Image 1 (cartoon, rainbow, N blue to C red):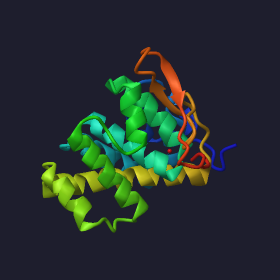
Image 2 (image 1 turned 120 degrees about the horizontal axis):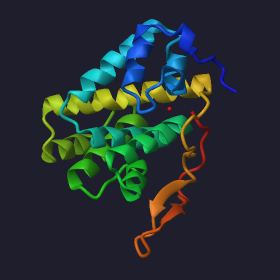
Image 3 (image 1 turned 180 degrees about the vertical axis):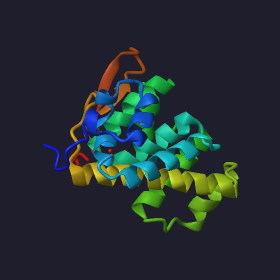
Image 4 (image 1 turned 30 degrees about the vertical axis):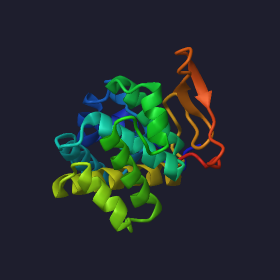
Length: 207
């Protein structure tokens, strides 16, 4: 059970109404639980929407931002984040393999893989990334503005992960659990399967 009650449709302010218009579910009453919990603080909701909207206009592609979100959610043990961003990733055209790899902070594309390794380092090392990791990002073509945008995307996802852990937000997407269930594709048969990671302990769910 959630520790914080989601705002109901008849209690919603203009920020939640506007944000729900961009959600695939469309109806305000079906806005994601995360947004309806965040709407308890109109100022926090406004800050989140402003930041999210600004990053949508940045240099990172929607797929790259979704891959960052999956990598960060896996590290933070955020069941809500994994569930929400896996659902979003499918709508963006990311494959099961793409998202399986993102959860392990890697990708088939070398530039994206470098970005995700950097994101992993930022989260695990609280920003104290090594010179080697920073230079690897530079060599992959990341300019100073793009590096800053990447850090901003990482931090925004940390906020959502932590809030959902604190609030114990009820997952309203097909549920995934960190560390144990990684949806993937059997490359031999092409059929969806569940890959299990032996090197990551299961973590509590949180976005």
